[in-house]
Length: 178
Figure 1 (cartoon, rainbow, N blue to C red):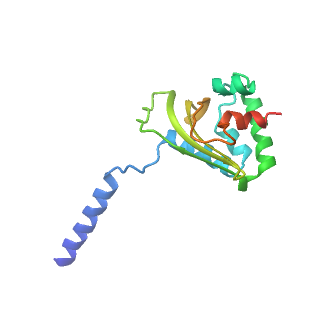
Figure 2: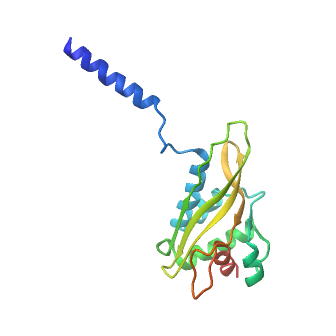
Figure 3: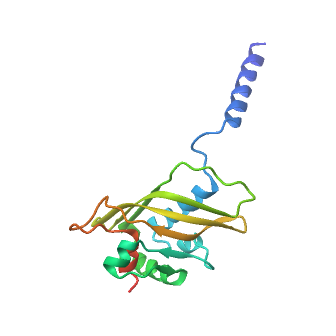
């Protein structure tokens, strides 16, 4: 009888543990952005391209970069991936670190095919020399059941800088676009 009670206790605990959601469960949107982060940290161009919707992707520069550095309004998929390829080749994975801090958000339902995630904080360090912390906005679209980045807007923030010039993700992309 004692073993039966212990068995019921163990099975009940497993049932409760399997049925209770946790805050750390990954979500499809969070997984898509984690894939972008991993692609950068591994300097893996193919993995980076796999996070973007090649048919519609645009990188949007902040107004500050357009004004101060004569950056264009956007980079197309081809322009962005060419810039990223040069950055990955020049720097290598050991010199790039990207992390995101996602805001609280509710995962879209299965019938939703477009989702905007705003105020995503990013931390980007290049070659232990250039480091920035700012925010960006992603428009995600669902293609064949997978969430891909359709648009990325870089916001200009004054969190950090080099010689009084605050860098941005866009400025880093712009530097490698030549």
